[in-house]
Length: 409
Image 1 (spheres, helix red, strand yellow):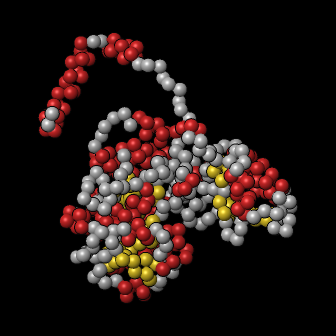
Image 2: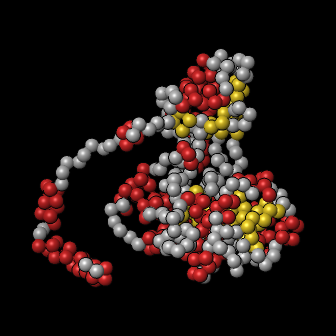
Image 3: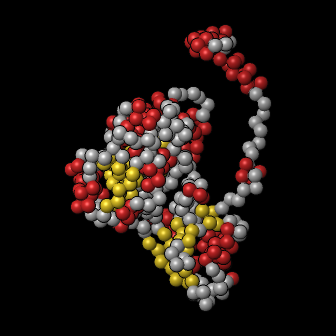
């Protein structure tokens, strides 16, 4: 059957459904369907089946540790919508409106992680609504192609921007920025977790962008909590805001959000799936991820974040109290000011008393039962966070850490 005949015949299907429903009573149809269904098979434990190692995550929302765990509501939304077809653009339109309203943005779209948001947002700035330019990227000939970045912000994530073909121009002061602006300047990019390392603040960055009529983008990938950061940068005046969906938002790990000015989001979507012939075709997000991201965001803004913070503090206290019992250990608890803004326990030990290296300590936790993952800190220290712990796991972590350290004495 030819493609056009298939499309023409689609209009018959709903009518067929109505006719079937009118012939058989609803109960008969349901009963017949139920009778013909095989009994439900036992659920497979795929992790066990593949021999994969499960672990308690006392480290944080690291991508290589599979990010975070989705809330039940998100998983259910993904499962439920997986049974129906929708047009990807339609679901992006509707979900984008919901996300934009929550985050005080003009528009929003769900992306394949924060990295994808950076690529697509930059592409939108470069091409506008010109389909020829969209098809041309990463060849930026004839386009503005320089992005201003503070020297301390020029870290690995700029590779997302350079995927589009742009050139990074480093500056340090507002005066240097003024002198660097030219006819090729396309955008100004701000890396939020490096905010305290630069000489230009976020507010001044936005003001300088407006002064020179240059779009500004902020990368705040892991910078919630606090929840207010979801709208802080939109309210501040950034033209584009990029955030990860699979960290504390606890949406699909492969999802992210690009939000900001309506015309820039529309332009960014020209380089995004389901369209082809562009640099973003491979950055697909399915309907399950888009809808799951929306449900995750709704869940996140409804949480009692003050109560959650107190719970994390309590869990960290349990672990620190256990660490303090071991002779030769020094510990402290801090709250990182920007990224990963959750109570963080840092501890280290006197190697003359506890005969363990940091790697040996981590390896023993990793190979124990249950397996536990922590992250290394500066100068052979260990960092532990509680925000990915399940209730009660703080006791397990505390006991295991005390046991491993004590055996090294």
